[in-house]
Image (cartoon, rainbow, N blue to C red; front, side, top):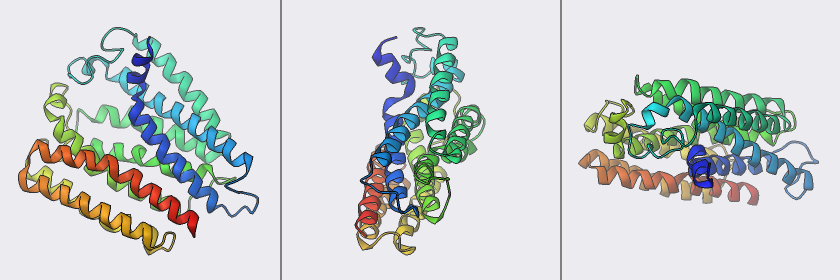
Length: 295
């Protein structure tokens, strides 16, 4: 297996986005840690951050690997996935399963060494993504809701990992909530763009099952819900006016892109919303981090 095959197997870009999200939340968690010995400048903090990054990378890679083992025959039917190593015949499902198990065990061990709750949440995310979301994709659009839960767990896991005994508080829930709501327009924009390819495998991911006004309206609704949700850090005084202002601007741009999709129902508009989602999340998370640290 080549490096290129491994990259396709673990979905490198998606995995790095997940790890980025978790690592940002970890630093926020360290800053909010009630333990007076915790510090952004301590060696132990950066050792723990490295454990989170490597463990998160391995756990996410394992979940993606299991996903591809399960969907090998379906991946053969879609243009964007037919060249992945398993459907292309360059790797067997047995090899993929062994590799996924190895990465999953190693990643869970690293995350569990930070605290028990972090390890348990990582196992839960693998199980939910690979064995609930994956099979549901052919059955019902509810798969997007199920998939949004493990998709929003990385910032929660990152924050919990920074707490010595593992705890979930308001900040953890806010970080989870922003990414959870963001998942819906993000997923549906991708599903709109790739709907023809998805239909070849029988995937039903758009809210109404197709590119129509109903799907566009529901997508727009979630971009509207994201506006107040993105302001929660400022509303609850965990962030100042800087993060509030940047989040509001980003959310309104995102809302406008959702409105254009509602008005036109065109693939071009969905693609614009999709690329907007790629920029939205890291900008808002980074702004929350910088504003929180500066307080």
